[in-house]
Image (cartoon, rainbow, N blue to C red):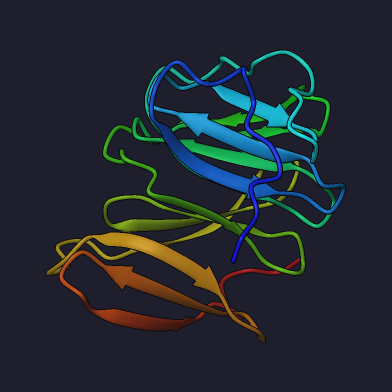
Length: 171
């Protein structure tokens, strides 16, 4: 059986949409109002709320260097340091919206998926490459890194695709 360790009196004012732990036991939580809170492992809020997103945050992911990536449903990706300072804001192009997923690989490359595009970024926010699928049958919903530069994508129609991205990204 699980044992409840802590229930905070402080909370989000809207539904929690994503959670992610980093290697220093800092928990990031996000909500439908576009707010991110950072928590210590004993349930205390760490720093001020991060309020830079205008829309619902759909995904959070920490790099092994403790850089937090947050993606909202407007397509905006923000990179934060562990103290909550912004490193970079990546705005979508006009045809990209709904950043469903952000995920880091072991070489500190961030992959983000949108409706029909997967973008690849460095930790400084510079874009490396993208996969555009044009008029694909189904939209990207989720992505996950495997080993050896293999990226899996899950589509809204239930399709799973594996991508060898070794030729389009370099570190």
